[in-house]
Image (tube, rainbow, N blue to C red):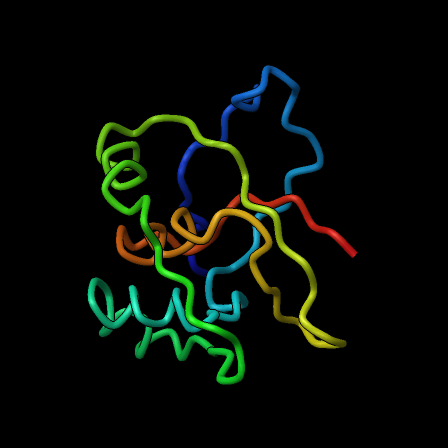
Length: 120
């Protein structure tokens, strides 16, 4: 069984509220939107191919502008907020509501899971 690896989730959010109800989701269960897929092709294409990550084909591309800032946080091993995910239709997959950079950098840094708050 694969060991779960993930970035450290902060006890408190940036706004000072407590981070609660964190679930650790396998990264291959994240459905990439076109902006995330574009970043993936640039930074971690082979990892995404190996994990057989799914992508949305009909969404609008949104650029990932904060890559450098979030990348620095990963390199410095800073604790970060969990991502916010929503179940994709009636599947075992999730779409990202908040935390696209953290998802992509988790792939890039070789993590297997990501701390998430799940929304219905």
